[in-house]
Image (tube, rainbow, N blue to C red):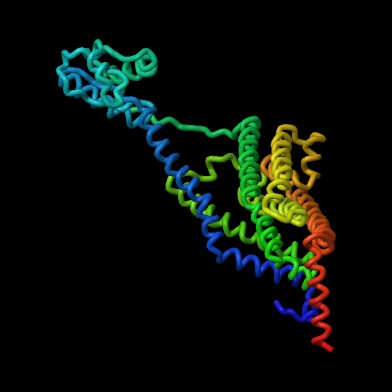
Length: 414
């Protein structure tokens, strides 16, 4: 950045903010700390994906207890053939069949007492007089299926079945609203987690530069509003990079496990627009919370003070999230409208509306209102910084430095 005051005076607020944003964005993006920051959330995502895949596999194995056959060879082969024929029609509703190589006259209770593999019940006797041995809950689940299999083995059930035509109906209004409500809640939780995870970078960056006196040099060169705006948008850009990396890894895991957005009920505005609004509302939620953290950073001189001052804001943000979540259940009420209007809860409440209500005009108005609130909070934070840091306390050095800098520049120009 040029140190010539006349050159700096020619920079507009947007140009100066862009200079700060580019500087912070590149400095953070290519730092080792950011690499470790990216890797941090990936471990829970990878471990969660692996645990979910293993859990589903274990659940499928446990949820499909086997039916063992203990019969004479002729009877056994007939039952196996009947099970194979019915599997084409009934699929997974039939229990998996396993053939025991024990003596057909062996006691089924003794075999079950050995707790072999995944055997839940044993079919013995004959096709005409089958005997099912097992725990009470398994007997109730398998008795009808065993009757069907043995009847088929006796030839009492047709081997060919007529093709059944189907008629699909649209889901009911209650089911549709319930599904959209689940989508709205999931989107709010994701928005909250990302905002709280990433917004803290703004605060740590400002406190670090205050400790190194860098922020005071910047404030002596360009308007403080431009410094705050530049830092906010730089951190927002870094956050989008992090989300893109995490999203790509999560998408690969979801694709490998067979998960898709189709498993979630479609929002009222449709998935493409809902995702675009989600990105926009994340940006606004991040900028709103980041502007508040910048104001806190202007009041804090040490990391300990930052932790002390940021804790109430974090708790307040948690209450805001709970309020926005509660407002979902009562759309159109005074409480829900308050959640829409209050800037810090507005992104959460409006994202829920995108899932539950059609229409785009209300979102355009909400985004303009949130952008206006961001501007006000940044202006207030910059003013607070100038009053507390540039004119008092440790900031007195900055004021003196500013005078010396301009004095030196005056002497050079003379």
